[in-house]
Image (cartoon, rainbow, N blue to C red; front, top):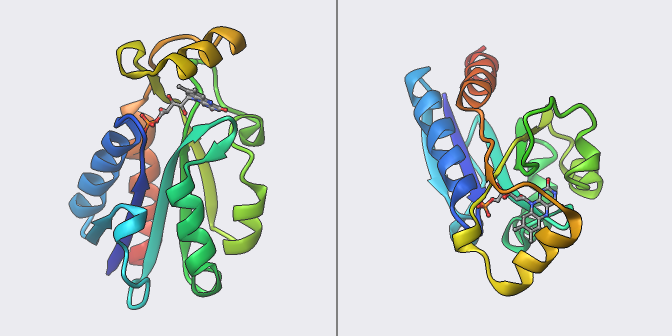
Length: 163
Ligand SMILES: Cc1cc2nc3c(=O)[nH]c(=O)nc-3n(C[C@H](O)[C@H](O)[C@H](O)COP(=O)(O)O)c2cc1C
């Protein structure tokens, strides 16, 4: 079984979530090919596609949105999982649309699931504009990523890919 893993990240936190997903898929016997959205040449020939992006102002990063625009007609006929890396909070993420307004993407590719994982805001990596936004929306700084949740999700989708 093989999977295409596509991860978009601005400041590196979603890339690191991608690292965990990549490792867990491999551990569960899935052969993984991993790319950034801009470097994908084709989505053909994979048993599953997993696409993740950091969320900014409720949207996926532009490279991830462009990837969906380019490939959605093929992706809709494939087995696809989506994940977003967003909120900096410990509370359970119940209403995913509150953090990642990606209904248009969900509509286009009809994924098996869209999961929002808690994210990481590292003040030292932000530019002035980003710091101003974080101040305005009063989002907490810090690393709220939950490695266990990411591993469990990946183990679960690995089982489904291997069925
Ligand atoms: C300027 C700015 C805007 C953000 N907007 C959102 C948002 O609308 N929803 C959300 O859940 N997280 C938001 N976040 C949190 C990021 O999605 C989170 O930090 C994510 O882990 C970043 O991933 P990256 O390091 O891969 O870019 C925002 C962060 C910044 C710095």
